[in-house]
Image (tube, rainbow, N blue to C red; front, side, top):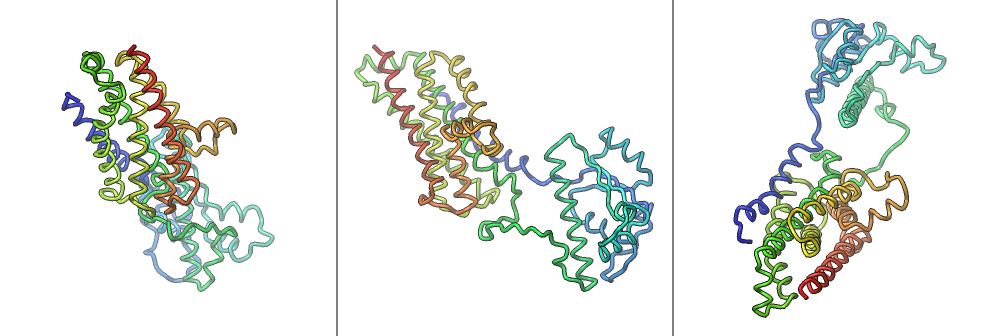
Length: 389
């Protein structure tokens, strides 16, 4: 490690990666351009009366739009021409629009209070038509979520003001979360992705660090001079492991510190267990890097093989999407045997569910990481001994 610039980069790179992930990935979208075509009140901002807490049967569209506008998700614009709104959506200048019929309030209350034997016209007039851009799955999901939440807020508020049980607004399906592990201040997608991203960051940076320095010192003759001086193969490998462990500890501290320090990503389990999983993934990455460096003779071959393994492992490790969606049972089982899959799930269970070593997923995450580390260490020792003869 005689190149201080590379050493500094390897120390600060995980910090930069974690910071950029937390700032840019999984946060709620805001100021999405959206158009409202309200035929009940053509110019909403000029004709909607101030919001009040009285049980009124008129201007229901204004009450509902008030609840939608309290969210930061949308930047609403008003329009009186539905064809123009559709054209803007097709051209990409907006990402969606809402159309409200002229007789919405009367039809809505008729549908709410007299749901039996409704005619088709009443059903259509009491239905809000929402048109969303289909080009982006994350944006579409965010818009659907915000619209549905806004509608239920409106309906619960209306029922409460009119002294009707708010439970009528609930769906006949109740999803029970784990209340002691529920986080209000972190988006669900970021909470799902964070453990896997942290694991992969430490794993592949340790891979690069150990492999590049091993090849560099082999090419400049350090290995050969050490053997002539009587240093054994095992001693050379131990020296690399000890040297890299110092950097690895700094990387692990920086990643785990940022998890709950700077960005307050919640974790409900043991911080020591979180540190252990991260550190072991770093050690596994270091062992894998030394194995590749012992097999391939120069930087180009090492980098090609590392890239060849990074992309499949990243896609198959369940970091970006659950392994339960994989096309075949064999692929799912193969994914579980990779060095990062179970470790990422173990870290996710520790962070989001507060699990400890008594749970199988945590044991599997640590166990598979340890097996991969030992396997890479044994193969590295065998290859180096064979090549040194």
